[in-house]
Image (cartoon, rainbow, N blue to C red; front, top):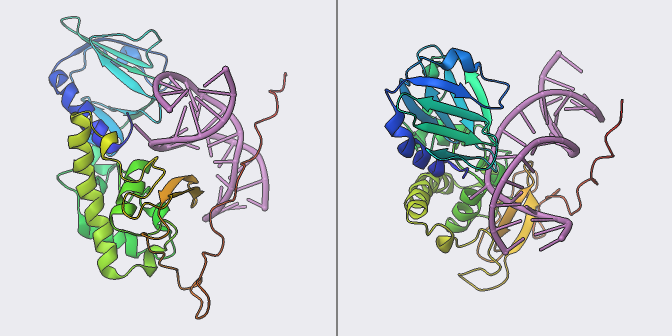
Length: 277
DNA sequence: TGGAATGTTGGAAC
DNA sequence: CGTTCCAACATTCC
């Protein structure tokens, strides 16, 4: 469910509840005062990137579906909801395995709407400025940075970097200005491609890089590695995607392999057995 | 079948 | 004390 466009779909499906009053709330989240919700009307349903925001008169419920979250309208899953809202006529809105937080009511004071790639208030200019302030950052990390591209996720990263033919280990500051601009523009373009394809249940069919084995352009095998600070899966073509090395890595001689690239393998072993105490 | 994944976070480690 | 790192969380799919 998770990337920004999926949350826009959630918001659209939830629009029916705007203006309605919660008569009962429950769930297994520890971050919600359920009793306080009863009697409160839903003032607005909003989103910021991957955050789904339920605006009440005196607070906001922030839902993040993380990797595995889900929701149902007028249905239940065979599991305890993390948050369940029931309305006058018995209609219900249930959320499962998500993160719920209660926020103060003034959302404009808490969110930079210009960062949300799905928002009417999205600003390419502001995103570009944030990028240029972080020249050392790798593009594989920048494309996942929610302060810059709120709502973008790993699918965005792989698809956009393939589209603009930039290697994931390129440094933001090493990209020519026109490439930086292209990156920002394509993040926004892909966001709406994603939304359209997701609604039509054809999102996966349109993946060119994410989870793919072969480059659709030159047909050599994609490389797959967990790169950057985020260690998230990258699928990329060494032939088609150009590596723009950072100043520090750029050597006058040699092909300029990225210095300390993503780790080679195996993360630490699983945790030791829980202590009894 | 088990490992990995559209993600974030709290707290440990340095 | 600020910054970085990583394990935990939990469900679904291949």
